[in-house]
Amino acid sequence: MISQAMEKAINTQINKELYSAYYYAAMAAYLDNEGFEGMANFMKAQAHEETEHAQKFYDYINEQGGRVILGAIDQPPVDYDSPKQIFELALKHEKYVTSLIHELVTLALEEKDYATKAFLDWFVTEQVEEEATMESILNKFKIIGDSGHALYMLDAKLGERAPATAAEDDD
Ligand code: FEO
Image (cartoon, rainbow, N blue to C red; front, side):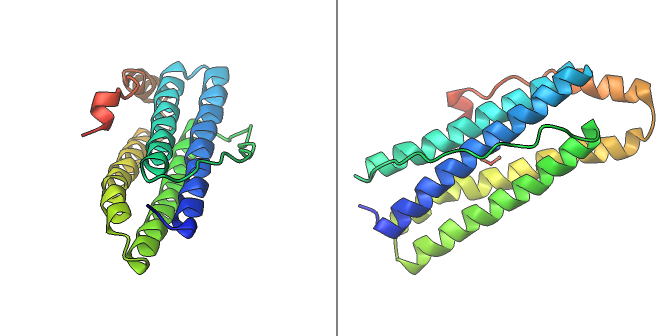
């Protein structure tokens, strides 16, 4: 059983994860429209992963006998300056999500809710990976500079990302 405060906080996190999915889907839509299909594919896979994060929180509330309440999802931005700016925003967003996960951990520790703390450990590790992935792509943009050919190659490379499967997501 989790406290009402924890149930509310995790329900809020479900909303944030679903917003993340929506945000990355909006970035994918922009990239598709601009002809960067590979990067769009990467962002679609990222959006898919975010819905899986939301599902993990959803399942956890149910396992703990709580009630999932889904709120409205904010509209993400429509227009972006460039593919590079999109990955800058994605890194900034992942850092924000990391801070939210850390706040949940703080609440769990304050409440001596060790079950939820253990559940959240997966997300703490996942956020390290999420930030590292975005950081690494951003570094490639810095190397590329103004080279159209290199941008084309990066687009092709990012297009190789497949959506995470449930099995991969459980490791
Ligand atoms: Fe669900 Fe990208 O954090």
